[in-house]
Length: 314
Ligand code: PSU
Ligand code: MN
Image 1 (cartoon, helix red, strand yellow):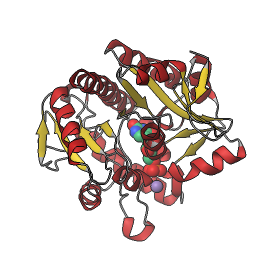
Image 2: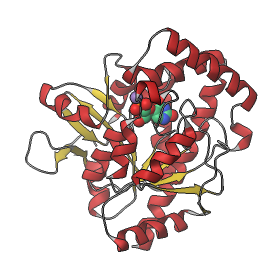
Image 3: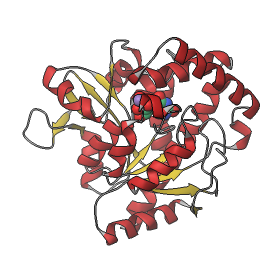
Image 4: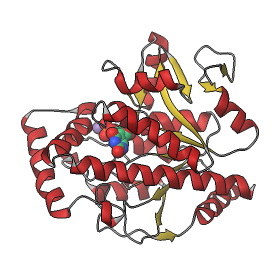
């Protein structure tokens, strides 16, 4: 697995692990995983165990995991053990959105990829299914800060199916759903007619389409392909089970405190999301972390089942 090959000649071309490359060549299911959640979204040292666990969950469901990151100026799709450890342990790793990829490659930098950078690299390598926790979106106070995650625009032009527990509840959820509609990104509720609330099973917002099995998701993907037209992502919004969600009253209280603390400290740009997530972990005594992990685990398992259903149908 440590042996890797580039899929084209440019020194800036993404490098696929041998295992991912072999799986793609034989139409076996592969699931893309992002690395920012590991490096910037979860506390050390737990994050390494989570990264390994998520890959194991993908394998347990019959698919090959492809964690994506940029290391020493090479975009890597599928990491070996040492590379995954580096993503979890290296405190100097940058957070790379899609727009940061070219400067990172050209300067030999290392960084974890967000949803936007991961989805871009995954789709370019021919991967079709991607799992994460919660997407970025429109932040509260957008009218002042104009802070909208690059995740949304990138997903609007990338043909990839993203399994997530909705968008992070630190965001303005109705505004984010409106943006997704404007941008033409499809949203399916998985086993629910409510858009999930990341730490919470429901955000209270409705979704227009409900699916109930991985096969149904694979059918929607097949219909999307048959229709053609401009590439756009399909969001599979998969709620954390109610038994594992964060207590909604606690959620609302600590979120208000976190947003206030973020504003007072003048935190902006890429630092906002990691700050808010970290604040919530501390303020809930780790309960938000458990809900976040439960959501991600469920998403990763579902993504593997969707990738398998798609491979079986083809
Ligand atoms: N999901 C999680 N934890 C995270 C993220 C997603 O459960 O840390 C990351 C993703 O990488 C996402 C990023 O793309 O947060 C959004 O950051 P921003 O709001 O700065 O675009
Ligand atoms: Mn932002």
